[in-house]
Length: 297
Image (cartoon, rainbow, N blue to C red):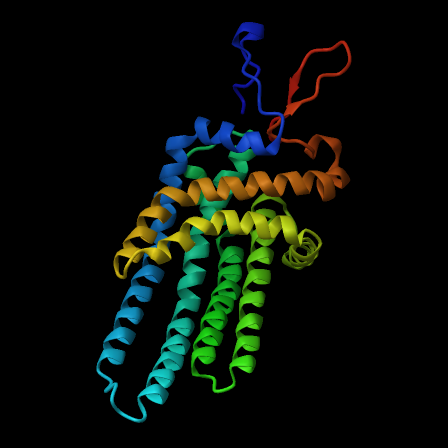
């Protein structure tokens, strides 16, 4: 941050030395702004959440109207689940794009914070203006992937051949994991670098596969709180998701950026110049010299 290192030795406040520590450092420095970014991002998430609630409620109501004693009950329930997953998934795709357009603001702000640059609420809206369309494209892909995973789960419940159903379900889950990994690299690069879409897509595919396990761990860490909401009875689980999103988006975006910077410092940034490596971190002191800070450019 610009203030780091100002004021001479007594006023000096060192930056973190590692990306892991930088998350906690910048979370403290920008705590309230990160909450504000989460609140603003939630506004773009609300249509998706409301649609999920409405579609789930409609499906449960239709399932309750079926006659369990009917010989065709199982087939009717399976058909209802498949049609519900298909309809809900298709409608969710544009709503996912809208949510990702809002994420562009949160990611742009998190990018500035994690590279040591001053950040204001205005940077949230600047991120939407500069990156919103590209993020929306990622949201379309993510929405289609999520819908596909839900559809394969519905098909599994209706499949007479459980082995075949389990196979397609596994494929649906695997593609969603890979798309999620790709999305992390696509969004962080889009917010950080001035590069063409095709170049970012190629880099994202390489990183999604080349850094699969670290990326999977990062995605799992971010998704874990949302997964835990599944133990909360419906519809209160959706309320929990809303509250979590309100408080969480800003910090999750910062966490993903701190993780991504650690990879970029070893893969992309050295080719751009040494001044791009370690931005937002405390530079190692040269022998016999004083510590310096690496701030954003």
